[in-house]
Length: 545
Image (tube, rainbow, N blue to C red; front, side):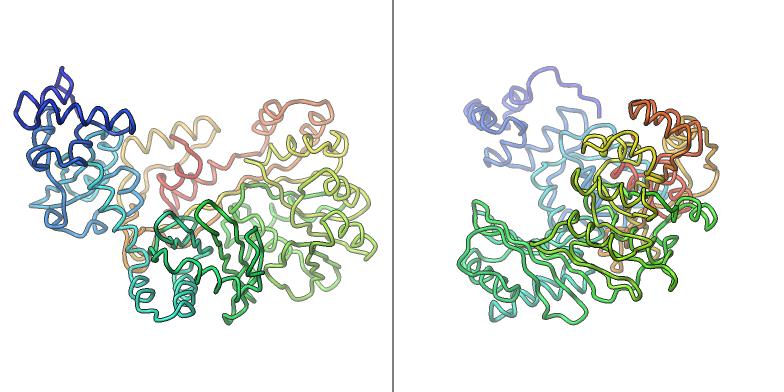
């Protein structure tokens, strides 16, 4: 959006008689406290003048059209044209469509990247975009109402609850119905906020009166078997809901006690490793896992599905003639035929692992390598004929080596025992009910081609891609459920030699890329080309452009 004004916008507005010098002075004082706010936005917040005339004047000054955005202005269903995610990311609100032309509002601070992204998205749907500007505070109000529509039946349920017992029950049951993995119940200054994490994204469900805060906390502590009097971090469980084991964590903050409920479904079937999105075929998978005298490590940040992948690999390897023992904190899925051990406050991964080694295991699953002691015992187990599977928190598979080094594991032990490092991320899958097919645009082609060139891969970009639209089935997000993107580092003799010689992760990565190693982005692009997810979702996870 070309800016043609030369003087400060406050001066221009005074010249036009929209505001007075005193109004601008007051706005500048406000701006000293909130420097991120623009003068025009502040004048709107302070009700210094007629807001409609103000935004029209600002639009004229900066060379575009301004409009005061409200419920009566919006004459279409926003999520029929762009998903909630895209609207939030670009702060874009479509508000009217006439004969193939669609009007879209942006904040006064809009950049060309957001304009181009929305223009191209709508052009691929056969619509020509007309851009308008409006106040960012008004856009934020509309985006918040859109976000709330993810759980649009929640307010009715909660507001009709006649007791705190039924209120808490409605919060949990709605979370279960909406496929939430976590429920956040957060005390704020003047209210209690309830948010659901669905397919990895947090959505605000509702706000509850501050007066009910102590009763909600009391009820949650009662049903999760926590101490009522203690104002300190606690852990508990809720077992009142059929098929669900709900882990509860409380943490005091300046406004009270926050609760996070992790919804774990009992007797969940373990997904096949290939259903999770693993890119290898059966033969390649067998070469990467189940190597005796070795360790396989799954690496990813928190919440990216490491444990699910571990379970899938164990289920893949599980046979009657193999003794498999797992050490977990906690046991999330019970698998027939496995010896599953849940550690408690009296034990640790390291101490439990020592005991397990006396139980004649063939395969050992260690929930997480957290410290040097656990790492060293896992290494020893791998060196004495066992196959060990575990997880570690790192950004990719190469950095597993760096992480083990920082724990104090020797280069010799790493090179002699670590067989495979697998890194992963979870990306949201396009909703099959509302995704809309289109051709790749030139910008997308350039991004994919540059990645292919970097890693020596010729991606086929002649096919189609899809836009995330949003519908009732996917809560108007355009996405439904998640899938993994993976990278696999098989430690070749060349890589092992570099580890022993103390080479850095940069040098090891260079050697790995000369072999069969392909980073996460390669599998991610493949899933975009397959129509499983979008380039935008991939960028949200990996920041590729």
